[in-house]
Image (cartoon, rainbow, N blue to C red; front, side, top):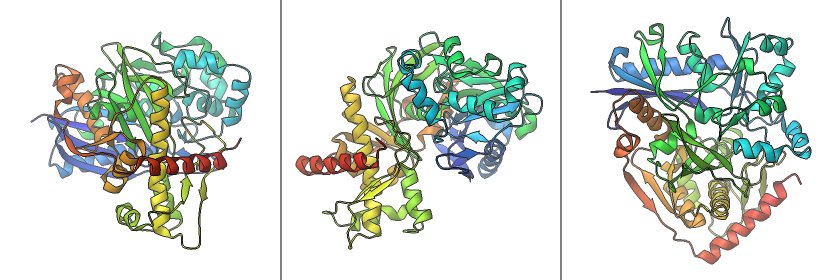
Length: 492
């Protein structure tokens, strides 16, 4: 049997999952990733911890499956996007902690650049908006705040990359400095039409070309993992940013197909085929994937905080001990309650893009309890999804069906709330580990185990479909209450 190893470098954990060629999950292991919050709105990770977590998880997954490294046909890598590292080319050591995609420290710079009229040019070239979410202002911040870093970068002594770049560098013992195309497309430095780094954007963000990695496809002969890592040299043949990998894991490979992932944040991606979509609703035009040098485009809505709301209720407020309890708590909540939670812990993403918004809990009364707060947190994810579907419809991408994945979708109550509030059919697949599965399928494609992307995605199957059961008038009233709450949470 051909086994595929997926390395999933996520925001809150690093995991390794072994799949069979037909998409069956064979073994997995997960190691939590420490979150660092040195200042308000700042979020950092240790690059060394990311790397160690992936390597150790793979060792554990192989041991669990009773497999040796030489029994792995190919390796796929998927990663949290936009998170930025700069490291010493000689030692491989980061010169500063990884600045996470959620980090908002460069918000003022983005506001100034927007006021100077740069956003139209940036959006036209990259499909993105001027926001601290993306990598360019993060790398510039590191070079400006680490003593001597700018001079060292110009001299070619430093390397920049997203998490995939850093991991591949170390898995190949520094032989490969690459970035996969969907990750490059999240930096604010990559021209989607030219499919290359853009000199004007490098100048705008003050990022020297000497630090940049080589841009590669999502599948192919990308790198060889050094035998010292797991005991055998392994081909790395698939890489994609986590949301793009999930789109492939959901078999969203035809124009118009759409998936939404519910993890730390929520990310909805619609495949737009060979056609770039220029959003008028402050959504993101981006890559879905790039195979054989041919880009497939996508339209994306990014929500920064979804699962973090559940984590906050669990870890900070101690309302429950396990996220699995939230379904029963939501079911037990008063149905006529008007409590809203706007989880803007690190600002609001699409379609609001308000870096200075902060979290808000409103509508609380004397009889509001843990059940109502849990229900509000789950409904917040559904309301934010509805915001995205409405924005996509205005951009010409009508949303009638959503394939969902991520840790939250095991909750039936939440999936039903999604169907009720968005009005779309919600399809939950048999395999919900779609991010890792997508990386594995890309690896299989790149290694020649599949002859095409449609062939690779044949294993997708539906586990359950949810359809609207809520009265539309009740839904409209609840959505109006949500929009009122968002208005109170916003900074303007």
